[in-house]
Image 1 (cartoon, rainbow, N blue to C red):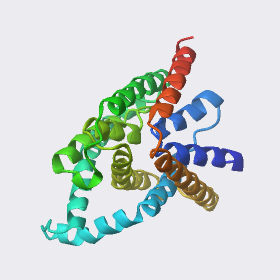
Image 2 (image 1 turned 90 degrees about the vertical axis):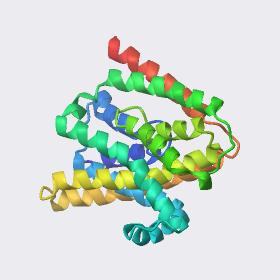
Image 3 (image 1 turned 30 degrees about the vertical axis):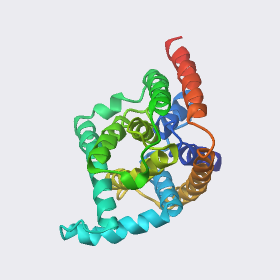
Length: 267
């Protein structure tokens, strides 16, 4: 891949992974609208690894707490804050693993990559995000996260397997509908991304093992580094903006892009 192509893919993935605008949708649109070659699964893994490290660094305190609770959870004990958080993250990840496995095994995921579909999901789930953000109260905070709410948000996250939906957008919509404040909704959505990205990375990694060469490994390392910095910057800006701005700017972007894509698809 050319350096320009690598930079483009890494920037798109890094910036859109955590903003509620759909990274998968944008990555599918890149070759569909520009004629560029698909970047391939190895580069997909690399840019996801970059965004994974970015969110783990930004929320390092919460990650450390959850990680410290894993050993106790494995022994069947949920008697610490860390074990509780780790358990909730596992519960929230179950729906996306089940639906993702179904789509993969049936091959149905191959039919979810059209420009028209992404246009519709951009538009519809943009309106859903607006509805949830305007309807939702701000009475709940992240420490009040419960098993029931973790599973409900997990169902929302599973919807993001449809390109254009946005994993962060769907989970934030679910959290806002449940009454979590904007910053807390975003925080929970970002923490939920960690096991989800890990799981998808492992699945893709198994598929491409043995196919990697030195040149591809070099490209992957560059893409991972670039996506890391792009994702970290996007996270910092979004979390700071949420102190004073709603999700409406992202909704407007989604609606405009959705309409443009639908006009393009049906013209």
